[in-house]
Figure: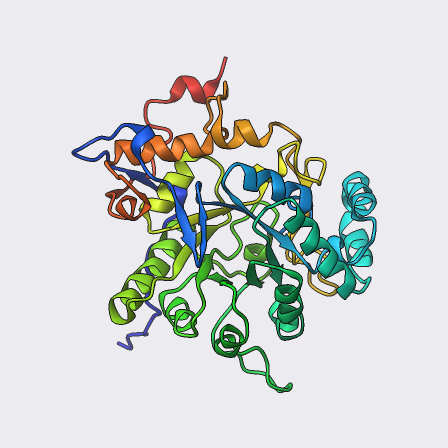
Length: 379
């Protein structure tokens, strides 16, 4: 009988599929070191705010810098298309749900103004904050030098999926190796979910990789395109590439888990899977410091032909102090995220983020429901 050949499938794991095993040694949470370093810059907490117009503007960048984190500002969004971005964001936040995507597509047809790029970067720099900015690969060759000249400290080359090799009939596209040679600041590239793609990107000389395709609350790429890998597996695969690359070259490339993180537990699991930092969108969008009035949307949402995102309402529920450092009265793990990371590291016996990479992970799909019947049925 004919035996058909099948593609080999492997199981992939997300945050809810796994759990961390406590270490044999525990540490006082106040003694663990959560510092993350990127190029010449050091951050007290390894948290980045996503480059979404409803999340980051110059004032939010200043506020997050004050807590030791890093905000990435979208330079191809409303901040650099309009002189009055606050009014435009208000218009987006108040639009009816069934009309908002068409409105976004209309709003984002306005051209990016180079003078506003320099202006927004200088607004961040005047606050004393480290300025990280996001641009798409199509515009990187043109805009990256302008950003560096204006004072940007970190460049994030951001797209739904990024590879070191891109075939096109157009003129020569973006060469990341050439980009690294032409500018003097750290370069973050994303997004990626596989070992091989991550490794090839590292070989171009970039400094950090964003991991995650479609897990964010405002992203619909997994539904629209059918692509993506659950975040624990994606982070572990890219971290394995980082470790192999470091072993062969002695150069360390940071792994940043980007998207799908809701709680302190998700954050702790990301670091155990190999992340050096995490990027959050919805959590920051829900703070009073964010510009989006409790709404946020991704960079691909306004795409003129095939939107891969939606406006999400998270509400204004907290502030940066409570979100990152507490204290909090919430019991669902959505506040005091840096405190949760410290406690998780201490329970796993990790003095620093690098040691958290060694924490044991087990497959445990019932970990959030085992014994929780009274929480599940409520009052």
